[in-house]
Image (cartoon, rainbow, N blue to C red):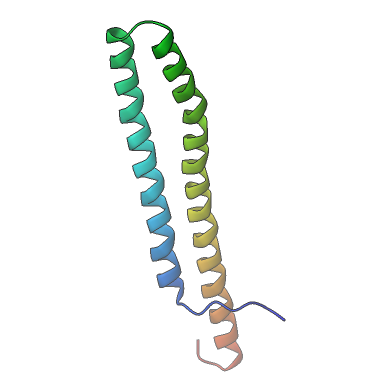
Amino acid sequence: MSGQIRMTPEDLKAKATRYENGAQQIEAILKDLTNLQTELSGEWEGQAFRKFDEQFQQLSPKVQNFAQLMHDINTQLNKTADAVAEHDEALSRNFGLI
């Protein structure tokens, strides 16, 4: 049994844009927090900060990977929307509609 897409290519592209916007927001937040971390490093010394910074540094790549996943989903959804539109156009030709 084949799957079904119950939305227009335009709707699918709109949803893809939401993933892209989410990725950009995540990246902006991570950049802001990285800058904050740099500020803290100039004002907070000692073992407690080193542990705190270590945790931040371990988490940052995971957050960046999540943002990249959102970019990838955007790309995949846009490609799917294009494929759906092309398929619909090809089917329309069978009926002389184009």
